[in-house]
Image (cartoon, rainbow, N blue to C red):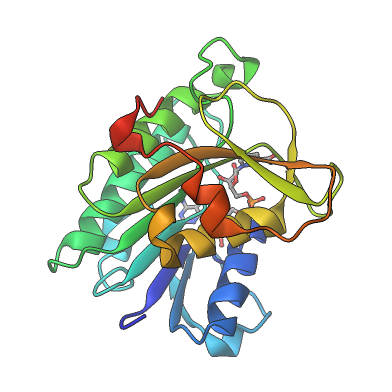
Amino acid sequence: MDSPIAVIGGNGRIGRLVVDKLLDRGERVRVLGRGPRAARRAGEVEYFRADVRDPGTLAAPLAGLSALVFSVEPGTSDSGPDSPEATMHRGVLSALAAATADGSRPHVALVSQIYVTRKSHSMNSYGRLLDWRLAGEDAVRGSGLPYTVVRPSWLTDRHAAGSQVRLEQGDTGEGKICRDDVAEALVNALYLPEGSGLTFEIYNESGSAASDWPRLFGALRHDSAAVAR
Ligand SMILES: NC(=O)c1ccc[n+]([C@@H]2O[C@H](COP(=O)([O-])OP(=O)(O)OC[C@H]3O[C@@H](n4cnc5c(N)ncnc54)[C@H](OP(=O)(O)O)[C@@H]3O)[C@@H](O)[C@H]2O)c1
């Protein structure tokens, strides 16, 4: 791509996989995180100490991007800095504002989760996690930017539930997904026109066929043609 790609949470488990895949494609990558830079391939990325709850830290690293990946752990407090509201709603809004302040229109790929529309799910008792994640999704969908909202099921580091990827919409499923497949979905969504304007859940199932991302994305309903929720 012509301009850098920023990965907020690029020191995290999904984030690092995304960063490696982008570096493999020859991209200039900016990693944003609160702590010290992770050692892995650190020399190849531009690292910024930044916190999505502190908009002032986002301006420089999110200026002039071609794409932005948001993969942030949300916190579970009912209010205050460790609340999902602070990270997944206000944090997303701050990232969108910083990434567009100079007129840029980056493709935004947001990591959300399954259950976001199931308000009575027990996960919503942790700081209204699901409600605020959905509000963050809505902010991305309403931003006017090209975007992809990826809703992972339960994350695993290996293929615990099979090696095949299944994408769904409607948020009714249950299952598991390997972090590497989530990272593949995020990265492919940035490059493939079929991946833009989509909200989908992602699962593994038995099988070993390599993922055909244009076909997987192409089989989904575009959000503009459906109720995204
Ligand atoms: N666990 C599951 O089964 C499951 C299922 C579906 C979705 N998810 C979601 O998937 C996403 C990625 O998961 P993961 O396993 O890769 O998580 P992870 O390894 O914990 O990485 C999350 C990253 O978030 C960053 N972060 C946290 N607060 C931040 C803040 N205020 N500002 C900037 N960065 C911040 C952290 O970076 P620093 O510490 O460097 O700041 C960390 O690198 C998370 O949103 C997670 O909730 C998880």
